[in-house]
Amino acid sequence: MRNELAVFAVAFTVVLAATPPIRRLALRIGAVDQPDERRIHQRPTPRLGGLALFLGVLVAIGVASQLPGFRDVFADTSEPQAIALACLVIVGVGLLDDIRGISAPAKLAGQILAAGTLALSGVNLTYVYVPPDNVVVLGPDLAAMITIAAIVAMINAVNLVDGLDGLAAGIVTIAAGALFAYVQLSQTAITDGLPSSAGLVLSAVIGACLAFLLYNFNPASIFMGDTGAMLLGLLVGAAGVSAIGGTIQPSRGAFAAFSIPVLIPALVLAVPLADTGWAILRRLRSGRAVFSPDKKHLHHRLVEIGHSQRRAVLIMYYWSALLAFAGVGVSLLPLPVVIGVVAAGVVLALAGMVLGRVTRARHRHHGQVRRFVSSFTKPPPKTPELAADQQKRSRRPL
View 1 (cartoon, rainbow, N blue to C red):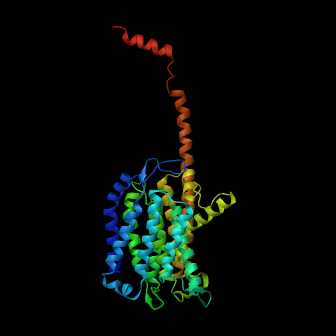
View 2 (view 1 turned 90 degrees about the vertical axis):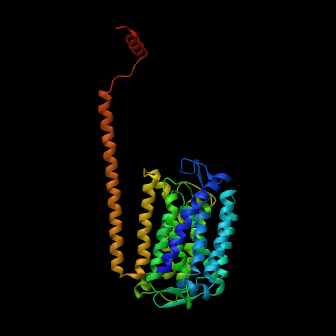
View 3 (view 1 turned 60 degrees about the horizontal axis):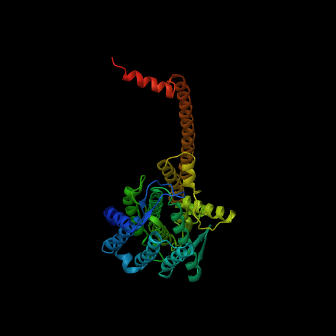
């Protein structure tokens, strides 16, 4: 655990130090998001924050290569190097989009190239556990195809959820934390007899995201842009595949009866993945292109019904944390405990919604009463004749 804390600290420090100069660079070269009808922010904001996230993760991986606890990972596998190379590819695509803008098909091709880099380097979903006692071993071609599809889905889920200040960084922090707990507690960090790089990558992601949130939470002084959103999606997807894809069986029999381990990365990102799926269906039904932007995502709707940006983001955090706990907790804890905690969380959320509605209704009622009373107590409006008469009186000598 000491090695993971060191990686976390390095990523946090690098992002904290690198973000201000990168913000100035973005302003200088014009990589700035301007307010428009599709965006919620009200002022021009630089959007190259993903470059700081990339530097933090890259330096953290480099430092990890010198730590005793990660020497086996670098000596026995090529996963860290493959993940770093895939990050370089996706950051290149993101920078092109943030600075110059590229088409949706070109962006998708870049995502497939980055995911393919991982698959060709051995970061693959090799085993799929099917309850109750079956293990499906995927062939190399099928494993690569499924891995690429899963990672591209993760990339786009994080990219599409990046619509409010601090939303994507916070949700990825929650997802990475849940996956990290699974890796540390489920004893599945050994895949195919080789050490997994999942703990290393997730430690770096958590540190980088928490540091970036200091600049990105509402009101944000910098956005991560497509560079950061696609990078974080790639990293969470790669860590999930590394931790789960080579595991022959789950850590608990109870988990085998109710779920499939390979779905854990999807469960910890359930909110953005569900939002992405609904967005695709919505656009297909309306005859629009799948990648065409709109303001009908879940976080946009929360703002439309009256929540502030901060409150909408915190609501998304809450549901993401609850679903992440459900997905990971069922593999680590007795099922009744997980059901009880999730049920309590849902009840608490519903109670908060009801209390919020009552409070807003009370405020509206009080406002109507104040306006009604003030209509009788405030002085009548000044007419031109009254104003001229008052001006004459003020000039009259005493």
